[in-house]
Image (cartoon, rainbow, N blue to C red; front, side):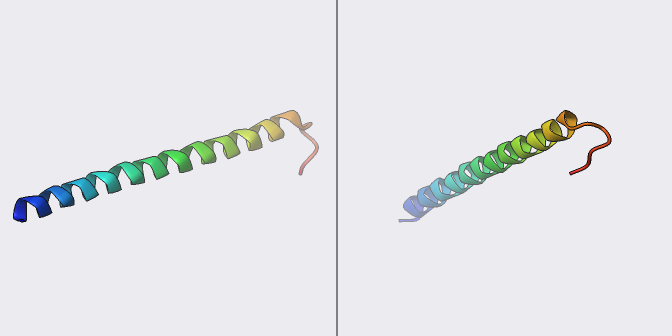
Length: 51
């Protein structure tokens, strides 16, 4: 019973870890794309023109 509980705990921990890693990666990717598009927009516009 105890070993089963340990195994389950380990499984849950690893799942949580991989899930949070996945979420972090997703957020990082999205943020990077948003920042990149903003930079592109800024670079494309003439220097005198603001948003």
